[in-house]
Image (tube, rainbow, N blue to C red):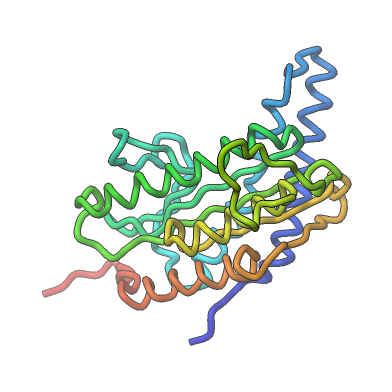
Length: 256
């Protein structure tokens, strides 16, 4: 059966429009109220700005036969056990009864690319490793492996495209990092997260700050493309739907 991808590119452009539009609205409100966020904290926290991608995931779940699944985004319902720490809150969980079907993270970064890139990298690696180790030790029960997804939206700007110098006083960095921009570093991160099997699929979308009206974005490689992310996720959902079809609807009648 062919996968249903639900015009995902159009939905992604709408999500990018919402991402920049919500940021612009928040900045206007800050100026009006005088509560300007010091520093760049607001530039690295996606929050509700990425809800357009949540809607994309929801449409893929329904289109590929798992409409009976529960999709959780509320803070109290996206908690999973960990191995190195008791729990971790994800951005979105998909459950079928007591079984975890998928866990996804949606992150963004606008400006302040230095330390925030390192923080995002450490967070992505640690989150996945902690969950998979907990899964290995039975924290999620004896069920098939869930889908883990990581989607990153990064501002496409001069600072994120510029080559970055590496401090290497004792040992050389790997060749692929030599002169790599922050966008390239994020692309390498996405590729390596999948190759090391920390995530089932990742996606990196680079978008300029002028995209509030166009939804413009670009991808940097096949492995970190939205196409790869969406098809991998839809395939997992379709396989799960085949494994556990929806329960029959009650007709309200009685059985004798």
